[in-house]
Image 1 (cartoon, rainbow, N blue to C red):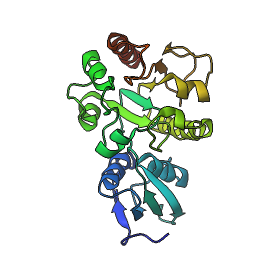
Image 2 (tube, helix red, strand yellow; image 1 turned 90 degrees about the horizontal axis):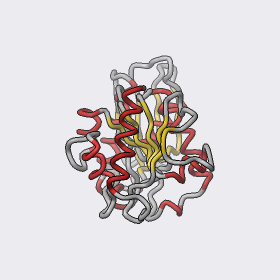
Image 3 (cartoon, helix red, strand yellow; image 1 turned 180 degrees about the horizontal axis):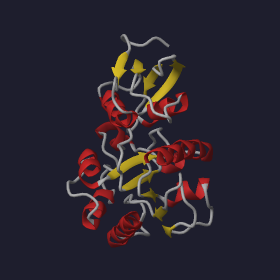
Image 4 (spheres, rainbow, N blue to C red; image 1 turned 30 degrees about the vertical axis):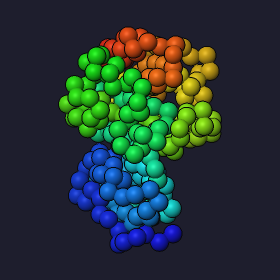
Length: 247
């Protein structure tokens, strides 16, 4: 595919850990279906590989069509911007929230868990993990609350995602966790963790780590989940925060 313009330089001379938010900004500057030439030229570190570059593009809501490595450790890619929600991640994350996949409302507003009736933000605010409603960047920079999803593809319902997508997405997110090393990881929605890790898992602290970090599993915050009250979700998030404090 042919990009709509010459390559966009992203992160030239910057640490690789700056790339997720810079690529998220690039995602927001384009429309779904745009084919974008992207040149990644950060200050390379020992973990800077073609695989990581591809992971970052996917995490930012792009589907890489071609990704090429140059001798200078520069990566050049042609990627399609999809209807998705880019990761909100950076170094020094206290708690990384991992959702299932974006809803149309979340993708179109660039705010996770934004659909009417979703209780994530009321619960996060009540739990003290954020202080500004529906502001992922503020939550990241002020409170160390990062956000990603297992699957980048937008659907109206989580049950439209198949197990293969969850497994592939979990591999990417586990590499992200191993790289950025948040204090703890909180999976929102039992289905994703049960699909890729433990079919019998119940909500709470999990026996195994993910990317070397402790894991808390909690029910989905969607209003369609009638089994969990807002007070229950608040307590789950408080427990996830306590796990992060111990991590």
